[in-house]
Image (cartoon, rainbow, N blue to C red; front, side, top):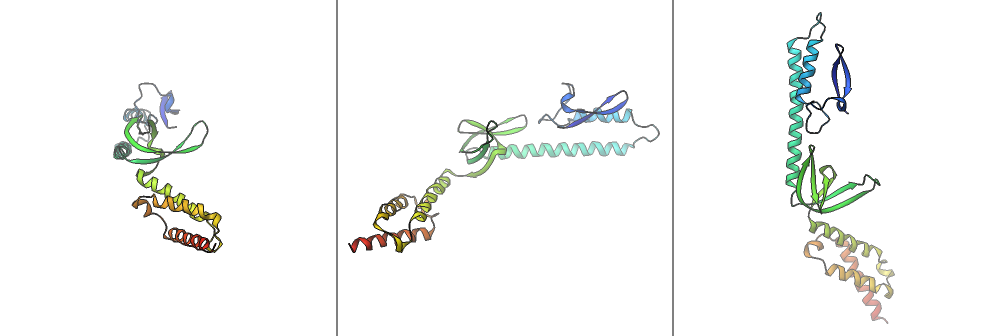
Length: 215
């Protein structure tokens, strides 16, 4: 929580930002000093400074310049975040969303329909829900994600097959299922398949054919 200084009985004292009056100016995120706050503190500091060791005007100017620089950086960060959010409209994204109730993290996948801004934060509309930009994990395409799923399944099916020399007729159905899955892939999806997996499938088919020819 941000802290501000107020004047009480001629002294500067600490108080939390939540204890300030409703008229206190705040930045968009609601928990940092606004420009009006800073100026009020600066006036108070000048009013209650030690008359025997007063601060120079240069010190006050340096403080104001530092505050302005920080404020400019915060505004720039907000602008960059807004631009990032706008650029995601129409893109297929993966979000890692943690439930506040259970603490479990789920992956939300879908297209960004629109972007909205609330209290200085950016939210993405995906599958009818609003999610913080902070939850963004991956920007990809639906086609690529589908390829990852089907290629991963094919690879698992091939890995589950025995070594070629250990194959038996009882493995024929598993080999056929792997072939059906591979043949049903698009050209793009096949491009992600390991050449070793394809070779193992072909070797398995040849082995099954050899076994059946000897019966």
